[in-house]
Length: 192
Image (cartoon, rainbow, N blue to C red):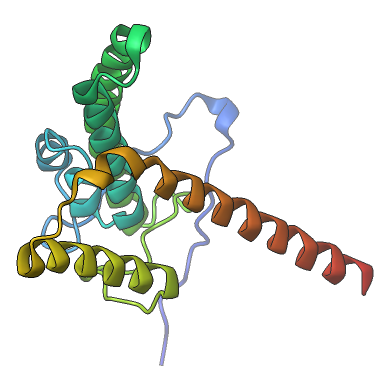
């Protein structure tokens, strides 16, 4: 049985002036393909476009950033820095929309195999609830305080004066966690 002669496929060298092929496109029928326009429009609500594409952590960080800045602006706690914070909020909001649209484009190229340097989100579904001691304790504390207010009519006026303590505790936790990680890395490095 005669087989057809196979001709080896070789690409011409780039010096011959032949244009590079266009970037790979994901199939429009692939349900994982994300629309950059939809991602950008969803990011009018900061972080929602990133969540749509699958970058949940980044999306929630954007939501938290905007919420903190708006809270600080509304409380007047920034004093003379209010105009600077307002400008930062406007630029961050715009950056958020552009970031979501660009992530959708890069995501689609990576799905098509056109760009291997892009980090795809590891979970395409909705994020599941994972256990967290700190998160659980925080939710229990918030629930207990709100229950004390609604069920036993205990005033919440003290929260207005003491809420910065939560930031101090969280900051101390982050410093402690970083010190633990650094210590474990130095112990791991000594064993080599």
